Length: 138
Image (cartoon, rainbow, N blue to C red; front, side):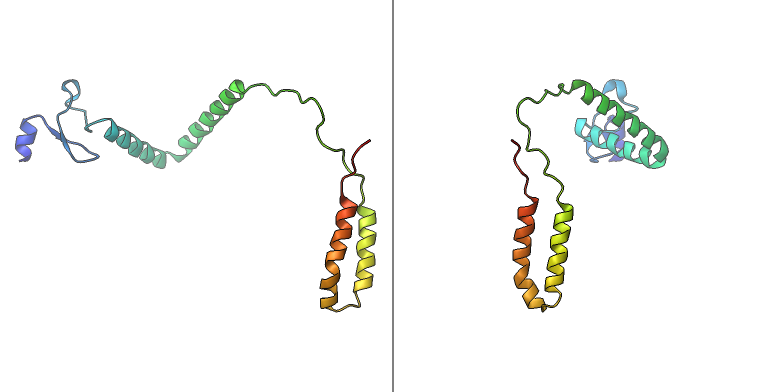
């Protein structure tokens, strides 16, 4: 069977193992039957090559990424200037007041049991939320 296939000019695809008739101009070198198998073969060979030459692959990949990023930067539209209101101004620093309040609560709750502390905790959190709210500008 193999002799008959060889004499008729047919070959086995290296990827899907199907029989095919190679192109007349590439009869000696054609290894795959069509575009899908060619893609699979090229990917397999590239993966093997990258495994053998890791450092070279890393250098080429870094260069490729730099080129892609430069192209994307060049193609990206220019940022438009922001007009109109943005967001509320920063609230004044209230860390010292908050720290004093926490210390006062700590002193107050130090003598309480865990259950009493858990009951008082929501009240403490509500107070700290009020003190950290952003004040709207004039």
